[in-house]
Length: 117
Image (cartoon, rainbow, N blue to C red; front, side, top):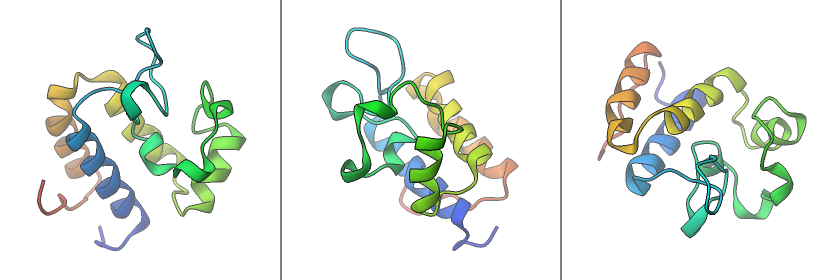
């Protein structure tokens, strides 16, 4: 995939974020994933949404919901299936397994692994 493709840029941003954060973004005192969680954490989709566009109303909405999809699309993150696949890496894996899951995802989607990770 072209290193300047929208999906490559999305992947780079999410991979860098998840591997740096190295913990899940969860609603306070729960095991429910959140766009914005405790201690200023963010999930994969949450990492794509800037603070100025975030509101608590987004929580409990999937990337397929119009409110989230409109924000992501407006920012250039238009491939909803791709975004959801990255979200599943956050939600369905222990953080210690994120690197391997992201590496596999990159290979399956013909993405280049971001420099410096």
